Image 1 (cartoon, helix red, strand yellow):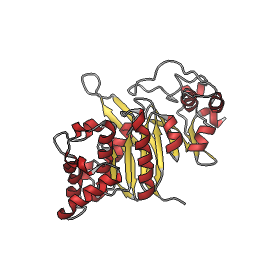
Image 2: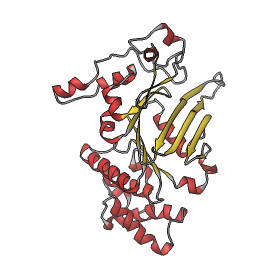
Image 3: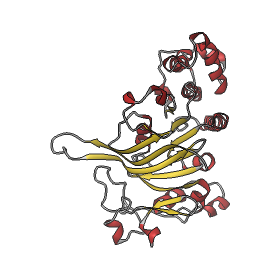
Image 4: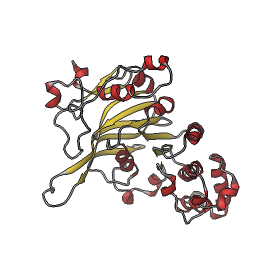
Length: 324
Protein backbone atom coordinates (compact mmCIF):
# COMPACT_ATOMS: atom_id res chain seq x y z
CA UNK A 1 0.00 0.00 0.00
CA UNK A 2 1.34 3.43 -0.99
CA UNK A 3 2.25 5.93 1.71
CA UNK A 4 0.17 9.12 1.89
CA UNK A 5 2.63 12.00 1.83
CA UNK A 6 -0.06 14.73 1.89
CA UNK A 7 -3.49 14.66 3.53
CA UNK A 8 -6.16 17.36 3.15
CA UNK A 9 -9.25 17.21 5.38
CA UNK A 10 -12.16 19.67 5.38
CA UNK A 11 -10.00 22.42 3.90
CA UNK A 12 -11.66 25.82 3.53
CA UNK A 13 -10.26 29.14 2.36
CA UNK A 14 -12.59 32.15 2.45
CA UNK A 15 -11.57 35.66 1.39
CA UNK A 16 -13.53 38.55 2.98
CA UNK A 17 -14.93 40.98 0.43
CA UNK A 18 -14.71 44.03 2.66
CA UNK A 19 -16.34 47.37 2.15
CA UNK A 20 -19.54 48.83 3.52
CA UNK A 21 -22.42 46.37 3.43
CA UNK A 22 -20.13 43.39 2.73
CA UNK A 23 -18.86 42.78 6.27
CA UNK A 24 -20.25 39.23 6.38
CA UNK A 25 -19.67 38.27 2.77
CA UNK A 26 -16.84 36.03 1.60
CA UNK A 27 -15.45 34.56 -1.60
CA UNK A 28 -15.57 30.84 -0.84
CA UNK A 29 -12.53 29.90 -2.91
CA UNK A 30 -12.19 26.49 -1.21
CA UNK A 31 -15.26 25.20 0.58
CA UNK A 32 -14.45 21.95 2.34
CA UNK A 33 -12.31 19.55 0.32
CA UNK A 34 -10.63 16.24 1.16
CA UNK A 35 -7.93 14.40 -0.74
CA UNK A 36 -4.62 12.60 -0.30
CA UNK A 37 -1.44 12.44 -2.35
CA UNK A 38 0.75 9.35 -2.26
CA UNK A 39 4.52 9.23 -2.47
CA UNK A 40 5.59 9.10 -6.12
CA UNK A 41 2.06 9.84 -7.36
CA UNK A 42 0.68 12.53 -9.66
CA UNK A 43 -2.74 13.89 -8.70
CA UNK A 44 -4.30 16.09 -11.35
CA UNK A 45 -6.49 18.86 -9.91
CA UNK A 46 -8.67 20.07 -12.77
CA UNK A 47 -11.25 22.81 -13.08
CA UNK A 48 -12.40 25.90 -14.92
CA UNK A 49 -11.20 29.36 -13.95
CA UNK A 50 -12.54 30.26 -10.51
CA UNK A 51 -12.96 26.64 -9.40
CA UNK A 52 -10.44 27.04 -6.56
CA UNK A 53 -7.67 24.82 -7.89
CA UNK A 54 -4.91 27.46 -7.75
CA UNK A 55 -6.07 28.63 -4.32
CA UNK A 56 -5.73 25.01 -3.19
CA UNK A 57 -2.15 24.99 -4.48
CA UNK A 58 -1.25 28.25 -2.74
CA UNK A 59 -2.80 27.04 0.51
CA UNK A 60 -0.87 23.77 0.40
CA UNK A 61 2.47 25.54 -0.04
CA UNK A 62 1.63 28.10 2.65
CA UNK A 63 1.13 31.28 0.60
CA UNK A 64 -2.38 31.47 2.09
CA UNK A 65 -3.40 30.59 5.61
CA UNK A 66 -6.38 28.31 6.00
CA UNK A 67 -9.86 29.34 7.14
CA UNK A 68 -10.73 25.89 8.42
CA UNK A 69 -9.54 22.33 8.03
CA UNK A 70 -6.35 20.34 8.23
CA UNK A 71 -3.23 19.92 6.07
CA UNK A 72 -0.83 17.14 6.98
CA UNK A 73 2.51 16.51 5.27
CA UNK A 74 4.46 13.41 6.26
CA UNK A 75 2.16 13.06 9.29
CA UNK A 76 2.93 16.64 10.48
CA UNK A 77 0.36 19.45 10.66
CA UNK A 78 1.43 22.21 8.25
CA UNK A 79 -1.86 24.12 8.08
CA UNK A 80 -0.30 27.43 9.08
CA UNK A 81 1.08 30.48 7.26
CA UNK A 82 4.39 29.82 5.58
CA UNK A 83 6.16 32.27 7.93
CA UNK A 84 5.38 29.88 10.78
CA UNK A 85 6.20 26.73 8.83
CA UNK A 86 9.55 25.14 9.81
CA UNK A 87 12.33 25.69 7.25
CA UNK A 88 12.84 21.96 6.78
CA UNK A 89 9.16 21.64 5.82
CA UNK A 90 9.40 24.54 3.35
CA UNK A 91 12.17 22.86 1.40
CA UNK A 92 10.19 19.60 1.21
CA UNK A 93 7.33 21.20 -0.78
CA UNK A 94 8.28 23.33 -3.77
CA UNK A 95 6.22 24.98 -6.50
CA UNK A 96 6.54 25.65 -10.23
CA UNK A 97 4.36 28.55 -11.31
CA UNK A 98 2.40 29.03 -14.52
CA UNK A 99 4.39 31.91 -15.99
CA UNK A 100 8.17 31.54 -15.63
CA UNK A 101 8.58 35.08 -16.93
CA UNK A 102 7.13 36.51 -13.71
CA UNK A 103 8.38 33.88 -11.25
CA UNK A 104 12.09 34.43 -11.97
CA UNK A 105 13.99 37.52 -10.79
CA UNK A 106 14.92 39.39 -14.01
CA UNK A 107 17.91 41.03 -12.29
CA UNK A 108 19.54 37.72 -11.31
CA UNK A 109 21.50 35.41 -13.58
CA UNK A 110 20.48 31.76 -13.87
CA UNK A 111 23.40 30.93 -11.57
CA UNK A 112 22.20 33.33 -8.87
CA UNK A 113 18.61 32.07 -9.18
CA UNK A 114 19.72 28.46 -8.62
CA UNK A 115 22.29 29.36 -5.96
CA UNK A 116 19.79 31.17 -3.72
CA UNK A 117 17.82 28.09 -2.48
CA UNK A 118 21.14 26.31 -1.87
CA UNK A 119 22.13 29.16 0.46
CA UNK A 120 18.80 29.52 2.24
CA UNK A 121 18.38 25.82 2.96
CA UNK A 122 22.10 25.06 3.42
CA UNK A 123 21.94 22.26 0.87
CA UNK A 124 25.71 22.10 0.45
CA UNK A 125 28.89 24.01 1.45
CA UNK A 126 29.45 27.29 -0.46
CA UNK A 127 32.48 25.84 -2.25
CA UNK A 128 30.16 23.27 -3.85
CA UNK A 129 27.64 25.78 -5.21
CA UNK A 130 29.07 25.84 -8.77
CA UNK A 131 29.08 22.05 -8.99
CA UNK A 132 25.53 21.81 -7.58
CA UNK A 133 24.19 24.48 -9.95
CA UNK A 134 25.79 22.62 -12.85
CA UNK A 135 24.16 19.38 -11.67
CA UNK A 136 20.74 21.05 -11.51
CA UNK A 137 21.15 22.40 -15.03
CA UNK A 138 22.08 18.94 -16.28
CA UNK A 139 18.94 17.53 -14.68
CA UNK A 140 16.73 19.87 -16.72
CA UNK A 141 18.92 19.63 -19.84
CA UNK A 142 20.08 23.25 -19.88
CA UNK A 143 23.53 24.07 -21.32
CA UNK A 144 26.07 25.27 -18.74
CA UNK A 145 26.76 28.41 -20.76
CA UNK A 146 23.31 29.64 -19.68
CA UNK A 147 24.57 30.06 -16.10
CA UNK A 148 25.49 33.68 -16.59
CA UNK A 149 22.52 34.72 -18.71
CA UNK A 150 19.44 36.56 -17.42
CA UNK A 151 15.85 35.26 -17.68
CA UNK A 152 14.98 37.90 -20.26
CA UNK A 153 17.53 36.36 -22.64
CA UNK A 154 15.84 32.94 -22.51
CA UNK A 155 12.84 31.46 -24.30
CA UNK A 156 9.67 30.48 -22.44
CA UNK A 157 10.57 26.80 -22.27
CA UNK A 158 14.11 27.55 -21.07
CA UNK A 159 12.74 29.85 -18.34
CA UNK A 160 10.44 27.07 -17.15
CA UNK A 161 13.41 24.68 -17.08
CA UNK A 162 15.20 27.14 -14.78
CA UNK A 163 12.08 27.32 -12.58
CA UNK A 164 11.95 23.51 -12.40
CA UNK A 165 15.68 23.36 -11.56
CA UNK A 166 15.11 25.91 -8.78
CA UNK A 167 12.32 23.74 -7.35
CA UNK A 168 14.63 20.71 -7.44
CA UNK A 169 17.47 22.60 -5.70
CA UNK A 170 16.09 21.91 -2.20
CA UNK A 171 15.73 18.17 -2.98
CA UNK A 172 11.98 18.17 -2.27
CA UNK A 173 9.62 15.25 -1.80
CA UNK A 174 6.68 17.03 -3.43
CA UNK A 175 6.24 19.67 -6.13
CA UNK A 176 3.08 21.66 -6.81
CA UNK A 177 2.80 22.35 -10.55
CA UNK A 178 0.43 25.22 -11.33
CA UNK A 179 -0.35 25.03 -15.07
CA UNK A 180 3.40 24.57 -15.79
CA UNK A 181 2.99 24.29 -19.57
CA UNK A 182 -0.03 26.49 -20.35
CA UNK A 183 2.09 29.59 -21.08
CA UNK A 184 4.39 27.69 -23.47
CA UNK A 185 4.30 26.93 -27.17
CA UNK A 186 2.82 23.56 -28.05
CA UNK A 187 6.19 22.43 -29.41
CA UNK A 188 7.80 22.98 -26.01
CA UNK A 189 5.03 21.55 -23.83
CA UNK A 190 5.78 17.89 -24.61
CA UNK A 191 9.46 18.34 -23.77
CA UNK A 192 8.62 19.87 -20.36
CA UNK A 193 6.05 17.15 -19.56
CA UNK A 194 8.46 14.35 -20.52
CA UNK A 195 11.13 15.95 -18.36
CA UNK A 196 8.78 16.17 -15.36
CA UNK A 197 7.85 12.50 -15.74
CA UNK A 198 11.51 11.49 -15.97
CA UNK A 199 12.45 13.54 -12.89
CA UNK A 200 9.52 12.09 -10.96
CA UNK A 201 10.69 8.57 -11.67
CA UNK A 202 14.35 9.32 -10.86
CA UNK A 203 13.62 11.15 -7.59
CA UNK A 204 10.34 9.47 -6.51
CA UNK A 205 8.63 12.87 -6.48
CA UNK A 206 4.96 13.48 -5.70
CA UNK A 207 3.19 15.97 -7.99
CA UNK A 208 0.06 17.99 -7.32
CA UNK A 209 -0.62 19.01 -10.92
CA UNK A 210 -3.00 21.96 -11.33
CA UNK A 211 -4.49 22.32 -14.80
CA UNK A 212 -7.60 22.98 -16.87
CA UNK A 213 -6.46 20.51 -19.54
CA UNK A 214 -8.14 17.11 -19.13
CA UNK A 215 -6.43 15.71 -22.23
CA UNK A 216 -3.06 16.27 -20.57
CA UNK A 217 -4.17 14.46 -17.42
CA UNK A 218 -4.98 11.27 -19.35
CA UNK A 219 -1.25 10.81 -20.03
CA UNK A 220 0.26 12.35 -16.89
CA UNK A 221 -1.88 11.73 -13.79
CA UNK A 222 -2.35 8.62 -11.68
CA UNK A 223 -5.58 10.07 -10.30
CA UNK A 224 -7.75 13.01 -11.35
CA UNK A 225 -9.88 15.30 -9.17
CA UNK A 226 -12.44 17.71 -10.62
CA UNK A 227 -13.14 20.97 -8.77
CA UNK A 228 -16.24 23.13 -9.15
CA UNK A 229 -16.95 26.26 -7.10
CA UNK A 230 -14.48 25.38 -4.36
CA UNK A 231 -15.50 21.74 -3.94
CA UNK A 232 -14.33 18.44 -5.38
CA UNK A 233 -17.05 16.99 -7.59
CA UNK A 234 -15.30 13.74 -8.47
CA UNK A 235 -11.97 12.02 -7.83
CA UNK A 236 -10.84 8.71 -9.27
CA UNK A 237 -7.92 6.75 -10.73
CA UNK A 238 -7.26 8.07 -14.23
CA UNK A 239 -8.46 5.00 -16.14
CA UNK A 240 -11.72 4.81 -14.17
CA UNK A 241 -12.17 8.55 -14.42
CA UNK A 242 -12.04 8.62 -18.23
CA UNK A 243 -13.86 5.34 -18.84
CA UNK A 244 -16.68 5.79 -16.34
CA UNK A 245 -17.21 9.45 -15.36
CA UNK A 246 -20.11 9.70 -12.92
CA UNK A 247 -20.69 13.39 -12.17
CA UNK A 248 -22.65 15.37 -14.81
CA UNK A 249 -20.07 18.16 -14.63
CA UNK A 250 -17.25 15.69 -15.33
CA UNK A 251 -19.23 14.21 -18.21
CA UNK A 252 -19.77 17.71 -19.60
CA UNK A 253 -16.05 18.51 -19.47
CA UNK A 254 -15.00 15.20 -21.03
CA UNK A 255 -17.58 15.42 -23.81
CA UNK A 256 -16.19 18.80 -24.83
CA UNK A 257 -12.59 17.57 -25.33
CA UNK A 258 -11.65 17.96 -29.01
CA UNK A 259 -10.66 14.74 -30.81
CA UNK A 260 -9.11 14.01 -34.21
CA UNK A 261 -10.82 10.73 -35.15
CA UNK A 262 -14.25 9.06 -35.05
CA UNK A 263 -12.76 6.24 -32.96
CA UNK A 264 -11.77 8.70 -30.22
CA UNK A 265 -15.22 10.30 -30.43
CA UNK A 266 -16.83 6.96 -29.58
CA UNK A 267 -14.98 6.80 -26.27
CA UNK A 268 -16.24 10.19 -25.13
CA UNK A 269 -19.33 10.51 -22.90
CA UNK A 270 -22.57 11.53 -24.55
CA UNK A 271 -22.59 15.26 -25.17
CA UNK A 272 -23.99 17.11 -22.15
CA UNK A 273 -24.98 20.75 -22.43
CA UNK A 274 -24.88 22.76 -19.22
CA UNK A 275 -27.28 25.61 -18.59
CA UNK A 276 -26.41 29.20 -17.73
CA UNK A 277 -23.15 30.55 -16.35
CA UNK A 278 -20.92 29.56 -13.42
CA UNK A 279 -22.38 31.18 -10.26
CA UNK A 280 -20.32 33.58 -8.22
CA UNK A 281 -18.27 32.01 -5.39
CA UNK A 282 -19.72 34.79 -3.22
CA UNK A 283 -23.27 33.51 -3.77
CA UNK A 284 -22.92 29.75 -4.10
CA UNK A 285 -26.30 28.12 -4.86
CA UNK A 286 -28.07 26.28 -2.07
CA UNK A 287 -27.81 22.50 -2.23
CA UNK A 288 -25.53 21.13 -4.93
CA UNK A 289 -23.46 23.99 -6.32
CA UNK A 290 -23.88 22.59 -9.85
CA UNK A 291 -27.71 22.48 -9.69
CA UNK A 292 -28.18 25.74 -11.62
CA UNK A 293 -26.38 24.27 -14.66
CA UNK A 294 -27.10 20.54 -14.42
CA UNK A 295 -29.46 19.09 -17.07
CA UNK A 296 -30.43 16.28 -14.65
CA UNK A 297 -31.26 18.48 -11.66
CA UNK A 298 -33.79 17.12 -9.14
CA UNK A 299 -35.59 18.90 -6.30
CA UNK A 300 -33.22 17.38 -3.72
CA UNK A 301 -30.29 18.95 -5.59
CA UNK A 302 -31.70 22.42 -4.89
CA UNK A 303 -31.96 21.82 -1.15
CA UNK A 304 -29.29 19.37 0.05
CA UNK A 305 -25.57 19.54 -0.60
CA UNK A 306 -24.62 15.97 -1.63
CA UNK A 307 -21.99 14.10 0.35
CA UNK A 308 -19.05 12.35 -1.24
CA UNK A 309 -19.94 8.76 -2.15
CA UNK A 310 -17.22 6.12 -2.49
CA UNK A 311 -17.38 3.42 -5.15
CA UNK A 312 -15.25 0.38 -5.81
CA UNK A 313 -11.75 1.20 -7.01
CA UNK A 314 -11.31 4.45 -5.03
CA UNK A 315 -13.76 6.30 -7.28
CA UNK A 316 -15.61 9.04 -5.34
CA UNK A 317 -18.31 11.47 -6.48
CA UNK A 318 -20.51 14.19 -4.93
CA UNK A 319 -23.87 13.78 -6.70
CA UNK A 320 -27.42 12.89 -5.67
CA UNK A 321 -27.87 10.99 -8.96
CA UNK A 322 -25.31 8.45 -7.79
CA UNK A 323 -27.13 7.82 -4.51
CA UNK A 324 -30.39 6.74 -6.18
